[in-house]
Length: 120
Image (cartoon, rainbow, N blue to C red; front, side):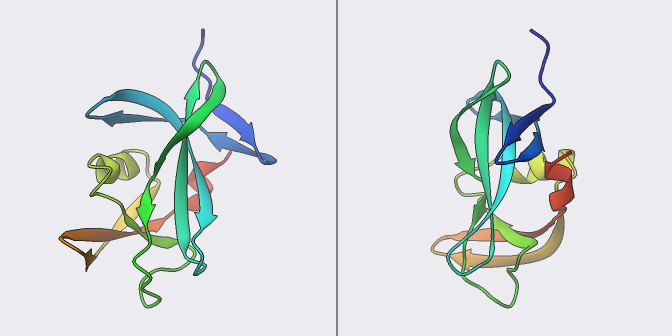
C-alpha cells in the first residue's frame, strides 16, 4: 500500500510525518490544541494503513509560563519524548528559541512552531 501523505481530520488536511523513537518508526499527524490556560499544545495521533489509529503522544508540556508560552510557542516534552527535538527540526515544524525552563528535575526547551507546516 502506498504511503498516505495527508489525513483529513476535523475539517482540515493534516500532513503525515514519520517519527523515529526508541520503540520504532511511526507515522503520525500533529494537531494544534490549547491547554486550559490558552497556550499551545501539540497532540500526536498515529496513522496506520492510511487511517487514524490512536493517540500517540503529547509533543509539548505546559509549564504555565505566560511570559514565554503563547499560541505559537511551547515547551517540548523531552522528558517523555526523547526524540522530540530531532523530530521538529527534521520536519521544520518548529525552531529552537534557545530558552529553557525547569519543572521538577527536567529542563524543557522552548520552540517556536510553524503551525502552517502541520496542514496542507
